[in-house]
Amino acid sequence: MLSIVKCPLVGLLAGFSLCAAALAADVGDFKDPIDKSKLTFPLKAGETETPTLKKFKITGVNAYRDDNAAIAKGKELYEQWCLVCHNADGSGKMGPSLISKEPAYKQSLSDPGMFSIIYAGATGAMQAFSKRDLSQDEMLKIVAYVRTLAK
Image (tube, rainbow, N blue to C red; front, top):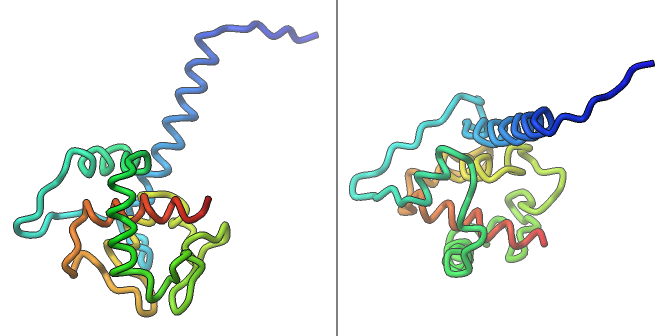
């Protein structure tokens, strides 16, 4: 008979490995939604990389999801840039649903994935917002707002 020995360190390391793997998978979504190439995010002239944006690019964690002021700004930006194609509630119109559990782009289920789609664009009418008058920090705030729509 096989005996199992409980070891807190093994459990801790296993939990850390699972957490690290999940985090790595999220950051792995920093890729072009069309050709799957790894994206880099050079700043535009005059654009500042906020501490929140910098941390997001390293960890894949969007701290704006817990920031009511950032979510409010994300809503304002969503209404300006996204609403016409994705509907006020994110259910989709000309563009796909942003709240579906079965999205047009699976990578949009993670914050790095949705950020990458906004940044680089996608098929159809979705243009790269990196070429528009929208900063990467503002894109991150839009992602934070969109996540409130799914609740």
